[in-house]
Image (cartoon, rainbow, N blue to C red; front, side):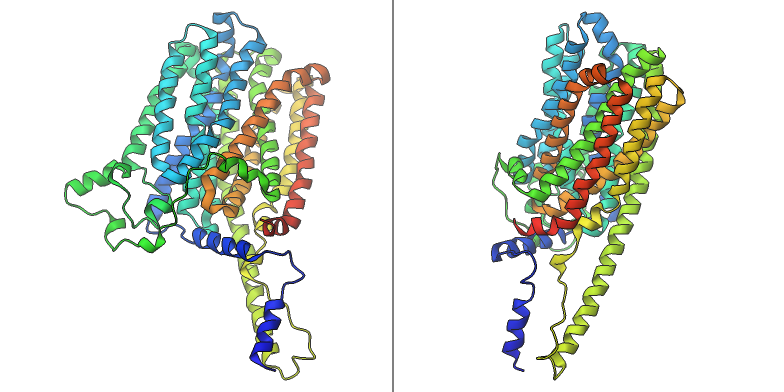
Length: 523
């Protein structure tokens, strides 16, 4: 048997698999190369600092929606508006929260992360100052839109930053930390809002956001490095001076060299600079696997948003609690977020690594069998053994398999939550239910976002914007119809419907797991 014949047989292998043309293969190899840049020269402590700082930056996006909720009765009293007008300020925020990242995130992909984060915070702080000084409700609606336009993109850019400084093997763990801190804003926002509004009025909420956001902006200016691979490569290439973090400039001013610049810059690690493409976010919707991942995440996020937003109104109407008491009732949900993110991140990371190890063992075993077949004198008569490749790794299964039981359990918790409030069977019941719902939602968000970053590592911020857009716009639609659905069906049946949607979303996840690789090959 000649070597030429063997090479032809090897090249014909895989004809039964989904067809990827040469350009797709090149793209896949490029994506794998980008994802393997990993943490680069950044130390583990630096990575943890960056991840936590980005989490706190994105925290304001979720908190700015939740911190506002306990103040709704106060706003209604001061401005004498009806509930529809009142909720329009919530919906406006959600709509702009979904749309604005479509502009900011392509800029972050093309011009770097750091300058865009700083710009977002400046706009956000100015909007909060205006909100605190507002004397007309229509001004509040307009400035709430500007508030969201400023801060909403930090959530999506956080995905890009985490994708820049992590590898596939540890991405879920660090993604879990950022999602934990970010989505803590949803349940903790009302707690802070209740405490502040009960003492300083609704204006105090926005002054608090001005002070807190200014503190985080200072931390970003001093500590947050540029992470885009097109700007700094693996971290050893210094960015332009105006993009450098202040603490590095201070060190250099004293003649000291930061640890990441002690060796020669690795210019080969720089990736091609991307052109600004305002349609980059919308182009993500062309891919079937992306659409399915976005759908299940958006559905879970919408259900969680509806539960957290209606929880405050239900506690006031059904249990007649004060603003401060309503805020404190969100604390268990915050605890659930922390537990779900931390333990979920560790569990999902361990499952991913175990799946990768098992796949690697199978590849090595099949390679040995193939080598034996090649060396065998009877290889012409014996069927060629199958050899897996790295590109066939079941990334969709590795990321999403554990989310299926989460869909089922969370669906049952939504149903329980609705009927407990319907019949007012227990004051503690709804609080425990919303805590469990929050706990289960965190690892689900983490898993789907990790998968999306894996699929599009060179467009991590734009893909994050697609996530933000779909889930915020769907949440806005959900919030817009919630009152009508509850009035028509009642609280119990409305949440039963929501629970069934959560359970049925597992079917989409199963399809994505089983056919995701085929969809990816069509790109």
